[in-house]
View 1 (cartoon, rainbow, N blue to C red):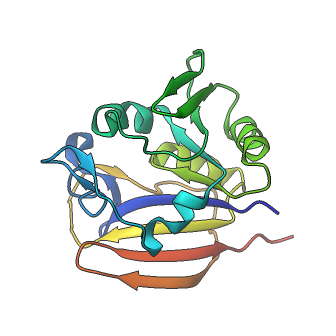
View 2: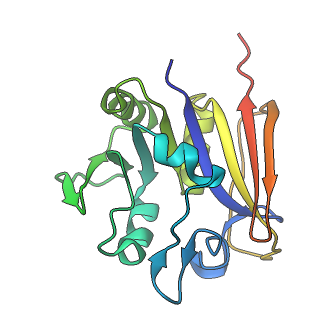
Length: 188
């Protein structure tokens, strides 16, 4: 069965973006903003991302990534962009971005089909994260906890419909981020 993993960088005080939507501190473990290129590493922080058969992101994540991704082929799988605006698919740097307006369930169905039995990763946007969690469509949460208190920005989880039980199944840490992986407990 396909595992659906939600992944996001988050500050210790719970923000997925800094003030004004700034991502530079939260993504320093992943991206060299001064040199404007993705860091090249293949460790456990990126294993699930690289192994995904498809990815789902929000419109904001797509827009904020266009410039830093540049001409690099960042994604090794098709990407489905959850948005309110209809748009033709975009092929860029070897990746096809398909824009989906029908909500999380439709985006996930398309991603699962494209993944061909491999896992699906949902990344980025706090709004997209909340939508998928509220709909009960997430099996795992993979957080990159960045050792910083931002004091403001966009909260990752905000309001959710009731408690969501998690079981921690992995913890790794280095100077730039701690990786925390949780299985989501779905009650029958």
